[in-house]
Length: 180
Ligand code: IMP
Ligand code: MG
Image (cartoon, helix red, strand yellow):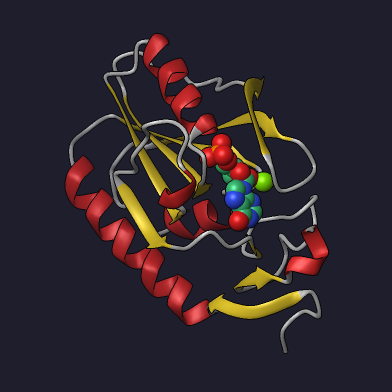
């Protein structure tokens, strides 16, 4: 049964599991033998990251979190990004993989990428579960993408609208009357 506020399902639990496994296989091949630090972007990435991390086999990989704010409670990005919680791991000379729920305008990830490079990371790559390339305002591309989608507002599996719906076990398209 879908939540009442969800118009249609975009990815069910089985499809999410398959998508996460495919991404993990690519990351495992690319980072074998490297000093990997995985940085989850709070809060939307947590469910995806929890599932992804358990499929990562890169020996000695570290986990950290970063929280940025630009999205005020609503569906429109402000472009004015601030770091609310920074990483505590040392990323200097490490290969950093940023894990995000969704890449939208690119404001958040372009800022976060520059921030981590300025801390001396050897490389910073981006892994996102969803990508809305049609809405891009900054020239950011993801290195690992689960699914490219149209300009829809999606929720569930960590993704929220005004802090709600993160707990849904699937990803669904939010009814437009909820956010318009
Ligand atoms: P950006 O800085 O515009 O790329 O925004 C990225 C952030 O916006 C993501 O981390 C999400 O928190 C939020 N966001 C963008 N699109 C959606 C969506 O369709 N559903 C839920 N959150 C979204
Ligand atoms: Mg969010």
